[in-house]
Image 1 (cartoon, helix red, strand yellow):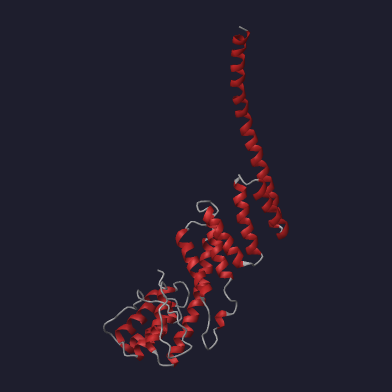
Image 2 (cartoon, rainbow, N blue to C red):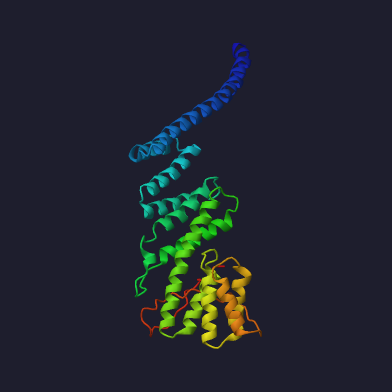
Length: 296
């Protein structure tokens, strides 16, 4: 009988244990989260003070000690930011990409994508736009920057980084357009007019916002006149008036239209425009169109 009397007490005791555990678990989780947040903020203080070794150590400690919290992934992203701030752009680029593989839907993914674009911009040669006479330049990092910024603007139209992304894209496209103008002029001096026309069409079709579209259109019209393509010349000059009415090239375009006179007008065919990959350093080398150059 004593055993039977003890049974209700034992059952009651078992029912109390889960209840106690249930009340303690949220408290423990809250305490863990608070500690993780405090550790992260401590690391952020070092980050804001640009104490890179101390900040790196502090963020790694958050990753190790609070791996189950969201602050661990945030610390990993801040470590990539430190690499960028220290101008180790190749390592930073790899770190941002690695972070995105595991956190593609995070709120911070917008920041990571923008920083990838900034890594490409930062890797552009400082003096590449000087363009030596041989035109021998590796513009791969510049094209990478242009593509990354264009994708960011397309994919994140509400991002707070959008104004900066647009500013950087305009600068990058200006540099690329300048290079193409140099190449077009190179071909003109060799009387390779079709090649020059291709380059000018590439500027208009690929580098919107560069600020050199009106100049490219004017030169395009001049080359069409030189090659006796009057309908195409009218189209190029008319495009200056219609799409770049405030540009310095407007007056010249009007004079050319008066010179050419009325007639059939053919707008510039920018739909097929592509930036060729080959350097014109060797005149005999045929142009080869870079696959995928037409991105829009």
